[in-house]
Image (cartoon, rainbow, N blue to C red; front, top):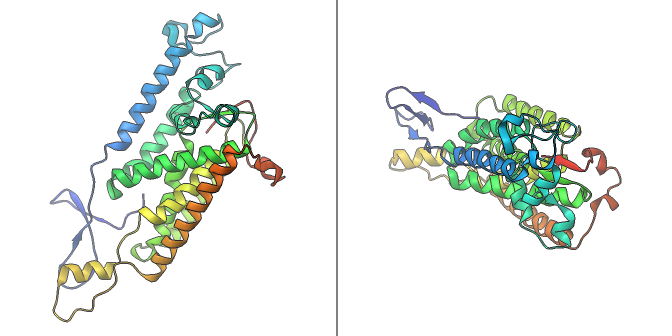
Length: 315
């Protein structure tokens, strides 16, 4: 996560410089990160539970790592990611358009982001979630980061269902891309608080672009990535906004005759309002289209090229 803070070795924390009047500084609050570790542990526990339910030796004699007993993996032919079968994932709550629309199992829009197709899939996602999530939670707290994680994951599930209706999908990547989107919008809405912001913006865009590009390869559900990214990007404008430095400076100095600056500038207000409107409209429209059974491929003939379509996909 980008930061304008400077380390203070005497107090073991960080401070954010807000002005040059004397030696005044405003402490930049640093939260203790506990939610992201809980998310990582929960995903691992759930994966172990799924492997217990899968019980490969009871159903097949071509399992991998048979010494693990009922926790052994399906064959490479069935699952090259070292994990359970597609039928087990579907049973445990994978994203499946038919079950969501026809059987009204809307809870799958949330449960799918806690399931993973295999050990490789799990480790990759959890490493990225921890790497990005720790810093975000330390800077903005568990409420805001947790909200972005869950809601952006939900958004990714909605978009995935609107385009991929003949496949099941699992994985936390939609929520992970939501965190990436929030990092980008946080940089944009707090643009004046950063040094080297141009370089930071280019780096973020390259990281996002490369990951979305890799999402076109099999067997990745790139629509979940795109939906999660867009959801997190819009939520970042609403939840990760910083007050202006001048406002914090006035609040600290309290000098007689100081000109009171607004807490947020006009650009920040405009971005917040615009993001709120777009998010609400997009979210509601997506849900209506989903439960109406629409397939957006009918309206976008080239969109299928954005994601590889297979029977079982990871996100």
